[in-house]
Image (cartoon, rainbow, N blue to C red; front, side, top):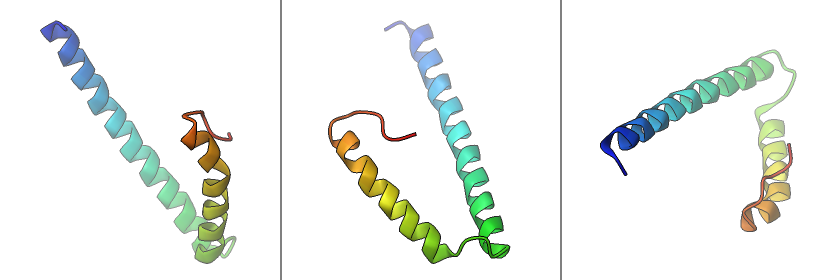
Length: 68
């Protein structure tokens, strides 16, 4: 791999990490607002996340994309 290609790869990974960080912050903010407004409880959120995680487990085990 050429140095230029490697540099581009590192830059792309850095961009993806920044995007991931922003998305994580946005999701955490939305969850906090929903909990603060009493629309959903933290327990309800955790329970639903666990259900969705179990539903997605078979596709993760096979390396397939999960439910949208």
